[in-house]
Image (tube, rainbow, N blue to C red; front, side, top):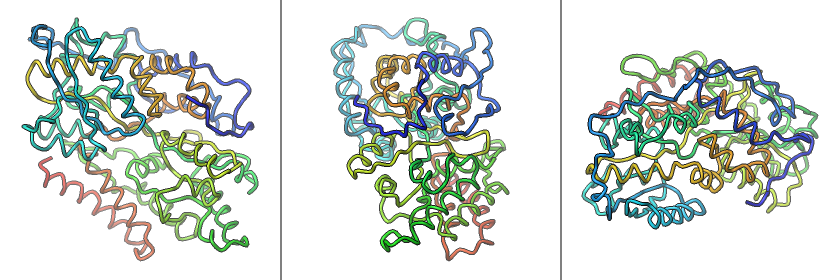
Length: 491
């Protein structure tokens, strides 16, 4: 993988932590629950070289307890597996989809059971969901999928379409060893759990991050990344002021932060402002109607009203950023390569970095992503699907997927195998230090609905025609709307 990332030497120390050290961090993280985040220095170099103290995990700690079923999966006749065909549907496209084709071809040629996997490109997670929730008699109906964790949880709780994996994982012959399970960081592994059932195996994880133009910030007089929300606003307003008072009218109204209303981005802002207990009750319900949510929405609204944040006319935030029409924008970790290519294409000489969401000495990151799931079918098809999932989850295969798709490694072993590619891209490598304190997107089926309702509520609160005093009523409607839609969909 070619190193295409452009960095400011001031932000990259002479010594980049080896992936061996980060590998150890991941192993320790996998064996312990996430707790109170450690204090992290937010000076410009600490984004790469800050060490994170971890408590020693209890001996033989594993992410979850797995109890074999009365009739373990290995009792499926091996002769029945021979020649068994299953459909694997995924949402990827481009380079990642091409890699999947190659990997599936390798599995088909080499697996000892004679299983044959047929690949189907759904095109997106939403299209895949339509397929899974559609006609089960369709010839292309899948037996194994890659889908967002909240989709898998929804298919378990609301329709029974997905098969719990507990007995398969615990199977002494065809399952995962305790060491293999412990290799997954808990924050990723537990995203696929509900009511004691493990419904997925992490495939890829991603996080919202803040892209930050360090060259421009330095010219504006800022030598440190923003450590707090107020710092973030101050720097954004300074950039907007410059663009509004230069000799170019075309960039008026730009320069600060490009508004991003994506549900996971909004949720990450809420967590950075201190949101707690957003899931409560029995059954669990979302409770966004809190003072901290009002504060967060009002903060973002003040940035818009004061011209420090703006709505882009297109989705090309990466181009606005490269052209100094935004000091900040919120994207995903998987956007790193795109931003580097964009800066090169537009001949930008600026250096830039990525940041967690500012929250004083405890910056925030929130992970979401895709997991492998086995859909309900015949026992033989389910066993074949599981064996394919287990093969795809091998460290060498997870590492290939990581290199093609970007994001975060889902296991310590896959991070070690991707050592060369990750070490060549220091910004990418630096994100591994965030995993020990990383938080999870809401690990519940309802997040599938709630994220879009939250997105809409946030968008409404930022509109100039909505009075500030209406934000509390928007939040009341937010919680009520989530409940209403869940009821309509039988959740």
